[in-house]
Length: 172
Length: 172
DNA sequence: CCATTGCAGATAAAAAATATCCACGATAAT
DNA sequence: ATTATCGTGGATATTTTTTATCTGCAATGG
Image 1 (cartoon, each protein chain N blue to C red):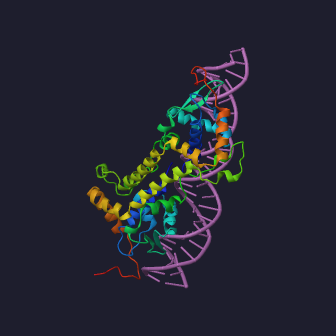
Image 2: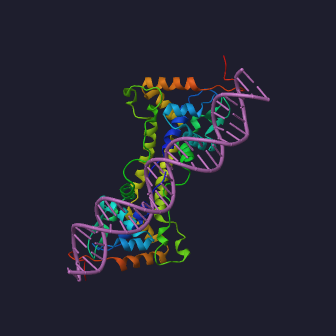
Image 3: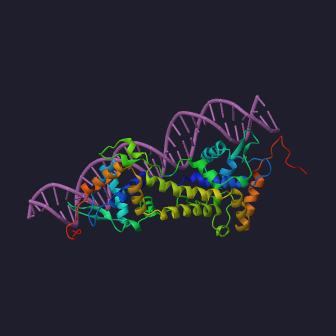
């Protein structure tokens, strides 16, 4: 059982995007730099998040990504499913049918109990991830993490976020 | 997130071994046949179960595998961890440190909140698997599954289990 | 002795994850 | 309009992991 590295990247990016103001965006290249990741590969994962409507993207010179909805309504489950796919970790291959004695298909209408138990566990896993809101991750980071780390992170966001043209970002 | 196919094989084999009587054993080749699996590869997984003290093995012509302890004290978690390894699915690469701004290591003493949330979810997953006893899987199968399937399975076990030499298997 | 079985290690084949690149459309600044 | 920047999608390459096979070896019952 293993989660791809893209999950870690995706969550960190989403958390960082939670810090950009208004409808500003942040370029994928900036996030790749922030985490020392391959820009071209990170794009793939950000794209998955876009497709899942977790992020929005803006093309063009001032373009980049931003959250598609408030961080309060984004969970780690949303992100994990978007990046890793929605299929369960355990896939029942129905190997019980593969023996030398081939019974009629009607003998296997009842779902495999092993499969049921494994899926139940995964349900618990997903429920726990669904409880973890991106906003919680961010606020815990703000309060608990080392002030130097928080300051550096915020500075990075402030430096790389890009205000958008059309919509006024609450200018004083 | 994906579980190897070996997990399914391992659980099915363990469930089948739960049906052998006394200290009898069943050869790996028999189980491979029962599930239509590659014998040489199945051996690998059975070996992991042996190493984890979930199964016992006996060499020699009458040899094979049997449960190392009663099915009541074997959980799906035991099996999954034995086959897939004990490392968590999410491994924090600490990519937050990989940015262009290198802070002192002391700025990262607090564990990453993302990692904590992911591990918490996995803890829930493992807890659910720990609740699933092999004996439950087997007894549910006996009562719920199609009688033809149960009969075929029991017949297979009866035909392939091999009594051991030294210990008397409650012979009438 | 000898046939059968599990064990360990080397190896190979297949699949998946990771990473890079390029042509393209969108867009903002000039 | 031109240009430079950016995301998109597809093709492709590289690396790692998984799956599978084979061989020699030790154990053991007959």
